[in-house]
Image (tube, rainbow, N blue to C red):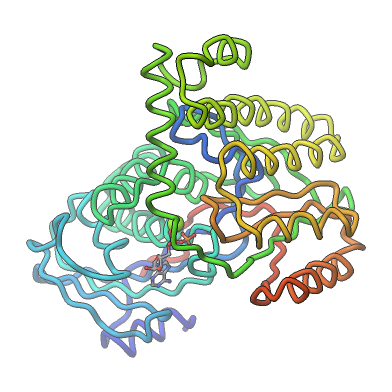
Length: 378
Ligand code: ADP
Ligand code: MG
């Protein structure tokens, strides 16, 4: 019996009907443009969240998480509506609500994606539950529809205004590839991202910094983008070129202008990154990562001293490129490095953090991995 089956049985007294898993993600490039109809290029990391579920004969939902000491939260199905107070379990209850589940369930979660590190443990949790429910009740949602439902859970039930990227890549990723995702219509294509056979590694640096600005800061940046789109009479940032934006500078506030400049240049960098990957030009990819970081730091203003230190130290240790990932104000950075430089790069970053009296960072490496899957049916 695998560990999640055993924990499920210890907690709920029976075996699960189904176990599904969904991974966290790192976005290689294309940051803060998913909500601007942009393109993003994330890949799934190897760490996954597992959801074990059993159908109950009544209309009660019981849910527990290994990361929350297996403590059972019980909620009648009919009470599961936006506005219901709660804690972590809202990510899963939101999925149950969004998918219109009509039967009680026992759910055990075991998340191996670090929580709150910018690696999207929230989407991993939502997508593991969504994948299990989709199969358990033969709902027949395709991966696009499932991604939209998981996003709806996070937006409308949990109340986090996230874009569609995290859920899409957690559901659709293929091993050895990054997923080029068009955030307008969710069409996607896999782009080979073979770090290992090119002697490279992607170092993920969790700065362990979490600055409290996050929620309001994110919403304000979305508002700036919406305001630019309304003022310049375009459908989205995607229709804007740098030339058109520069010519319209007088119509915008200084803040709106630099926010839009990030969106426009970042969308272009995603296309350049795809071309670089297809040409296996990792030096160019590194340059694009650096340019993305500078834009997020200076134009979008979502970096922080810890993220800048992680990026600067990586580059001084010889990284091909590095940038902050995720929403910003803390969380993780990535560095594209030569595999032989891994230990040295980690040391350099650790020393830089010590000198600045920052909390010690955590390090992960991960190859591009598989998206959500059913592990087994009972
Ligand atoms: P990220 O998605 O970057 O990890 P978020 O703040 O969006 O950060 O999501 C983290 C939150 O998701 C946690 O605080 C918790 O509420 C919930 N969560 C994610 N994984 C688990 C888990 N395995 N068990 C319990 N809660 C989880
Ligand atoms: Mg999240």
